[in-house]
Image (spheres, rainbow, N blue to C red):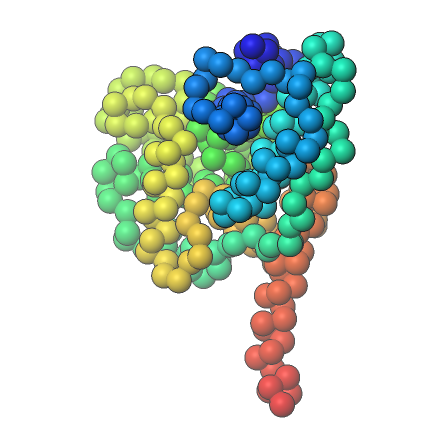
Length: 297
């Protein structure tokens, strides 16, 4: 009923990414299925009759079905944004989600890969020498050395790579742009990749990373490339592009980078989002301390 207008509002007024818009659409649809008791997209639920108690019961149902607290909180955020839009449009009088609290979450430290293990992977011979092997190695290297998000990598254009200034122009969440420097070694890898791309692919798609047929990479392809690459490192709890982003931040702080500088490189809007990595580095320091002979007594 009102969902199309809401999705257009997210896209054109709020500047949300396609990925976020799809997630919000899916979350609201799931809530509608719960309210209607049937999986029919052509029968939308009536937002004018939704009460806070219904939303709380939905959350409890999700938790009973072992949905993670973080996912429930995200679904609640989607619903809160939707009803806030409906109030703004005069469609409903009150936001039923306004005073609904999401489930509490324990502070989970982000997963990351140790520097030595990533160095062995990226300097080793686990990647093929063909176009796809060169692309995959560069893709993993770029995610780790710059800390950019998966969607930022996918939407990175050839014009965004400045080899003279040795910097990337990255478009992040809500179309916010930032500049990220890169080192000489990464520059050489990118130059070599561009040369191989011209010989192998031929087409001039504006995206920097492409498939062998010249089309841009999808989120699922990037995820598979990273997961497959990190399989070479045993005992990892998680293998994903975001793990490489965590690894970048952790490595930067472990090697003396200032917290505010890491915040700017990651594109965080708040320092609080970046500060979680200080807990990671502190945990590493604790492990090192417990190696001291006096600490073992």
